[in-house]
Length: 109
Image (cartoon, rainbow, N blue to C red; front, side, top):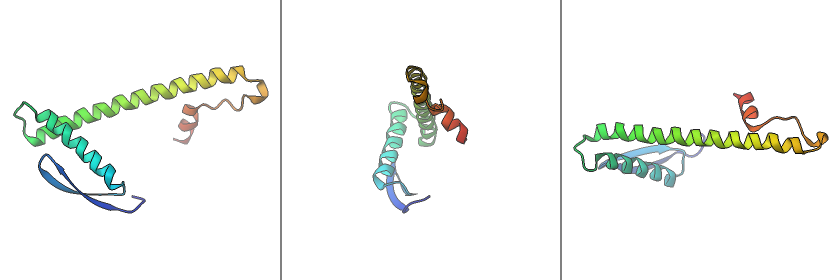
């Protein structure tokens, strides 16, 4: 943690938790609300224990994360392709090194 640590009390499926985080309290509350809604959605209309519903909600949220990451990678690839295309239109002296976003990030990893 790098910033000021906040302790935020949140309620998830009827249980109160004290979350310590350097994120702003509003962010922590929004995340907790999202988790609470996801668990309640899994529990809605079925008899599922809260702990099992939490695991199913975690799987659902993780799937959303994977889909968002894949979409982000696709956008980065499209931007890189456009950069290559635009670079070809520039005069040779203005083309730069040819480093694209993906290659620049990959070099630091």
